[in-house]
Image (cartoon, rainbow, N blue to C red; front, side):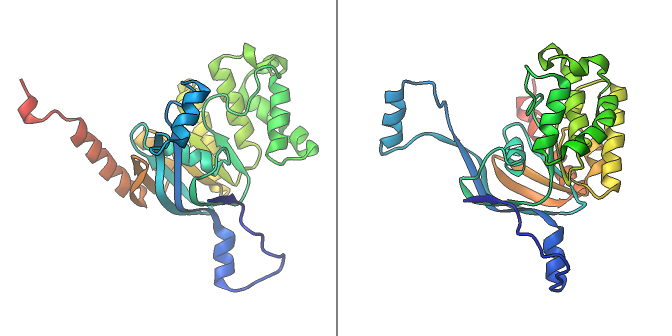
Length: 275
């Protein structure tokens, strides 16, 4: 198992078409498997150790099973699937928040992640302190952060609350700050996991406009959303996961049509069950 960045290419080096393809490849999953222990921590330490060393081993939930795909610079890819399909696990691997059990994950470029609300933000720090901390973690220098700070604060629309502790923020304020930080730190890869469902319609439109601007600048996207129209606006490709397995990988329209048809069939009562 491995998770790593791509090896850099020496300035001025030109080793032919393959070299160009390598530079454009930002995400590369090869046979990736990720599992979690079920009910970890619910029993006594003695019980946990007994289960671990028993012949049957621990009970594990396989979130991803032998998943492979690549994502190139400027591509937008939707990740679709029912709840528990493995979508958020896949995004966490790209973001570097977890490591695979098997296979390899290779990611190149600055990653901006909008995952669970509040991820990466500390409740005891002010909004401004969180902004500076997250920008530093994203690789921005102090000067770059100070230069971009006014745009982030203006976009977040939280006014004087920028200097108040995050624990005093509403859900919407926290989401707006997290989004502003993610999209104004010049990410090469932007990960969005349903977080745009939070907030009023006007701010959602503002977010969509900013995402489109990043698309026009060549940003790469991984997008999880149950709103088909939103996904189709930003993504050319889609990856359909079910039970941790890849069901289909192809054009966005093709995969979404197949997924939506399958979901309609699975949720429609059978004639035999009709009263």
